[in-house]
Image 1: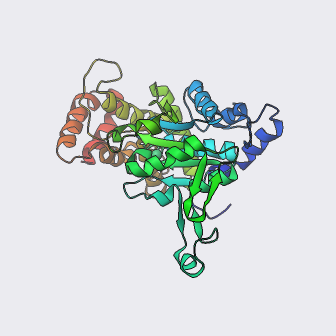
Image 2: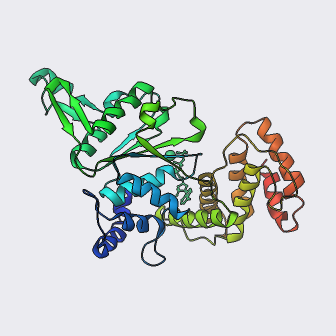
Length: 355
Ligand SMILES: Nc1ncnc2c1ncn2[C@@H]1O[C@H](COP(=O)(O)OP(=O)(O)OP(=O)(O)O)[C@@H](O)[C@H]1O
Ligand SMILES: [Mg+2]
């Protein structure tokens, strides 16, 4: 057991990656640690020793992996909480054995994050040299033939985004100050993620868009699928946070997922009643954190069994983002839908008490 709060995917799943590498006799693209087939198995699991990381359509993962074996980069697009970041980390771990070459896109991301910067102390004392240069994660990925990850690509200013064009089309990064360049080694590619909701923030230029294959990650198709995702992740998180063992009723998970799905889609599961949707996203990721919080409450302050009162406050917090309009939406849902369900009595009371 290490003391890091969250191990990188390649460390946490080192054993699974080793098992796959040992038996992998399929063709590996240059610079890859595993064949595309084995990478896909790592992501989706094999029902035996390899646990599923991403739960969703196989074809989506195959297209993503195949893209990375070509000269085009991969753009994972989707609404918040659809596992874009999660999938990109695991893809980089399986392909390069390294998921840490990461650029976080924000409004303040500078070109140095894509290209390179300088160690000014050395620059002033020695003048421009390779030693005075501080490479970006992208530059290191090029030199080492690995995958670089760019998170929230569309949040970066357009001119910074465009620094990727030369990298992706010419596969080189010029360093005019030294009259040199870094050429990409085989195995280099980029996985970027972008949020659907951010559309229009800093839209990708068409020149850049042409260099990416876009894969859209869907929200879970059915309630069963979403319950499956949530229960697996809650279980993993609980173990890695070393929360005391709790009886996690599948029933409670199903209820949280049902509430989230009904509010998200604007209609009850049986299709009979229309409900209003609140302003927040109510993603799968939020359902996971509501339940993880609930388990911590049950374990430390309750009797070790996850009860409606342990999840109620979390649900209300996730739903009511706008204190005025969302509260109205939530009240209405509570009184017209939750209250009518015979086996949801405790849950109804807990939600009322939670405000
Ligand atoms: N289909 C899925 N399979 C496995 N895990 C999932 C799935 N959907 C969501 N998750 C879980 O949801 C959590 C959040 O996912 P992640 O942070 O990757 O979302 P995101 O799409 O990057 O969201 P954002 O747009 O907010 O950055 C992760 O813990 C992930 O395991
Ligand atoms: Mg993300």
